[in-house]
Length: 191
Image (cartoon, rainbow, N blue to C red; front, side, top):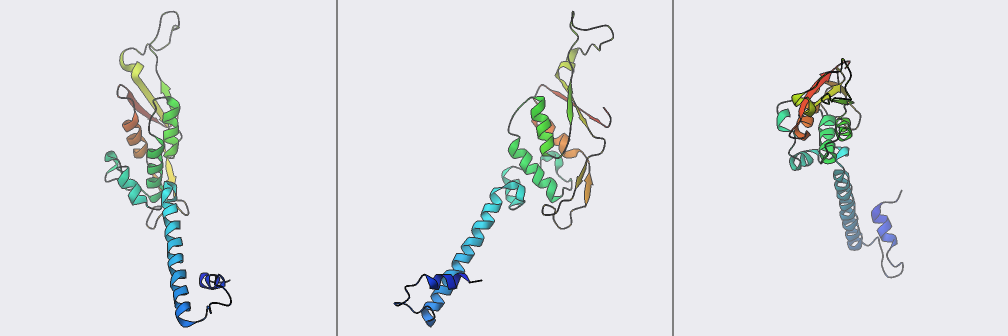
């Protein structure tokens, strides 16, 4: 394999310049080193552009004000931190059930949402729940009893646990994004 310096020497006019001359050879080596350094810098910058690579994670967290205040003091793996960044970037707005289900999915949780309607004459049947008052503004988030976040090759960092359990990130993010008039309940397990 030819080095970059050898390739630069091949670009010299063959009769006019001797690429092996000491001064010219040193200049070519310096140019090759500078180009290699620039190429490596470009690759690092390109990787940092995409938050899911994990490159520049601390910068992404600083810009997005992460970790969320409700997660301060909670230990998170690199993979969970990357998921939080991606989730925050993707979750810029929405108030539908599908938006919140997608938001939870971006954090690594599979959920369903149950909403409640007040009973109405002509529609409700005997035995149906009434769901009056604030029930019209209540959402029940149904999540698995145990949510496990597993370590992944290429995403996990040194010192990260092989698996982490908990739903604190889900509750924190959904509470931040829920409509102001909503009441959010969480149900874990077989709901």
